[in-house]
Image 1 (cartoon, each protein chain N blue to C red):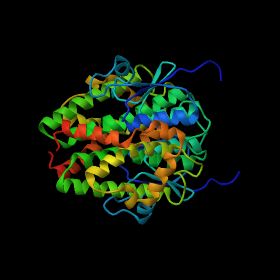
Image 2: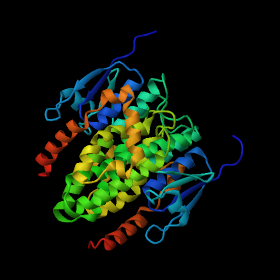
Image 3: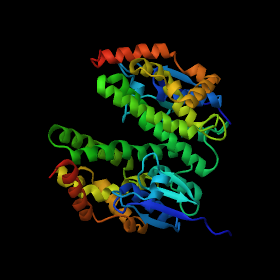
Image 4: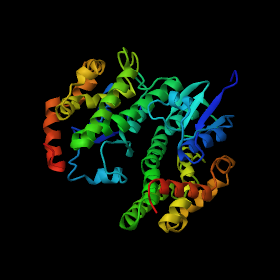
Length: 221
Length: 222
């Protein structure tokens, strides 16, 4: 590899989507600068220019060229810096990994949001749906240490940031992920033992404070 | 050379997501068995192959199921390397293609469907978002032959089935897509010159009849 790469991540400390990108870069040993965006206040000019369509984080700027959407970014990171690989090598295993990454993307953050936004009957429905999603993920994990057969990788990176929000969901929902899904609980501990994950994930108590703030903003008591 | 392992596609003729897969298989010349699903009465094979979503399309290759249309198209591109690749070789351009294919699903399909389903304020908002999204997509195409430049690729495959929905969008939205996005309409016509596309897609008036029926039945929309 030739000249030095400039890698910048437009970030927001509590965004699980941005955490995915940071963990991937850490795993690859790529030096990067994380620039915190004030998403509840004013988005920077750079963010608005780099992601004019969604105006969201994360954005990866590789030598000034922007990439948006966390799963697109993860694929790019894996292809640009192939070692260690995040995706399996066989096309079938890769499609399975992409399927579960997409499932997490579709279900987990929105499902969790329904929990902290709801009360009463709606909360019970949200909790049940969330538990069903977690059980499906636990089924996909099976007896493996990580989601794919080849070690910590793509699906792990996509899902693990969300656990920093689980404590908040548990407090508002009155349940414990580890009790409902012990294998997932064990996987969570395993991942937290990795340097990249421990470095990137925020303190769950701070995330819970953030969720309290969001609830106030949404007029939920 | 060893015979190719069996390829089965579980699909539903009018599904734009299924059409994406059919187009990709045709582009690569992959022989396969087509199984039409009755979505009101899903086959045990479908339920077994896609237990999470129970949806089509599902590609079954050598007994192993692959689900989600864009994931399937990329799988096809990785396994059958003959013919023109559906994704560029450069990682940045690949990322760009994946971004826009995802945009078709997140923004265009989503707002288009809402425009069809809803009335009043919700309909107007969806229509505005839909037209804006089409214009953004047209901005990406510019004056290229295809979204893949000279090569028909992932984004073309992701979006082209929805061109047969244009007539329906226009009737329910009361606007002209050709007027708003002439380049997209021209691109759609160019794609229809490809056999893989013309053989896989439905006539827009057939699509309209079906969607009108479903919208009336499910949402009481006329």
